[in-house]
Amino acid sequence: MTSSFLRAVRHGSAPALLAGWFVAAAPGDGRARAPDLAACLARLPDDPDGARDYATAWRARGGGAQAARCGALALVALGDPRDAAIELDSLAHAPGDPAARADIAGEAARAWQEDGDPARAFDSAGYGLTLRPDDPGLRMVRARAGVESGHAAQAVADLSPLPARADMLAQALVVRASAYRRLGRIDLARADIDAAVGRAPQDVAALLERGIVRQRQGDLTGARSDWEQVKALAPDSRQADMARQDLAVLEADPDAP
Image (cartoon, rainbow, N blue to C red):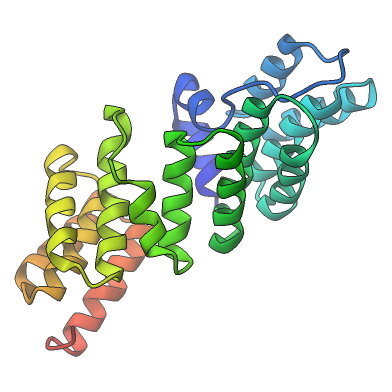
């Protein structure tokens, strides 16, 4: 299965990708040049193998941490997020500019998420926040990992108040709604998820979560409608797989909470 990272690389816009994964240049050894990093990262959308080879050759000629960083991100795109996360964590803990290391810690956290290890993602994002406290992107990453690793209360704290950035708000509402649901605060979960769907009515993560909240509130018709919409909007997505599972459970035991 193609990784969600590689799908994002292939189908996302360059500015969005740079904002999400490649925010700042990693600390270098004085010989690495920013244009080399840009050239390496530019290969990722269409040629992750080429990006990995570029990073390997660049590292051999003294590319240092920047070359290692691009090589690690290429590994994520090529379906090896675990090795990438280990490399990125090492780079984040190495001496250098704290702001750049915070960005790399965020990349490590996303790689751990891609590998299905939210506990380590939570730790990596938390380390990034020690370098750059209150960074909204790192708080979002830690909150999502926290929801998945038993730290729902911390996820709520990370997203309260909600981020000011409009492009992050709907996503933050979905994550916080999921955290509230896990804490048993269904009223607050419903308020957040309704706001999220209102901002992004075709967002499959929001619709999936609203279906779960509606089921918890006894609105089985509404839950079924949301999950069917998820399947229709993104039939090959992870959210659609989860919606199918929820629908199967609902059909097998309509009275289950």
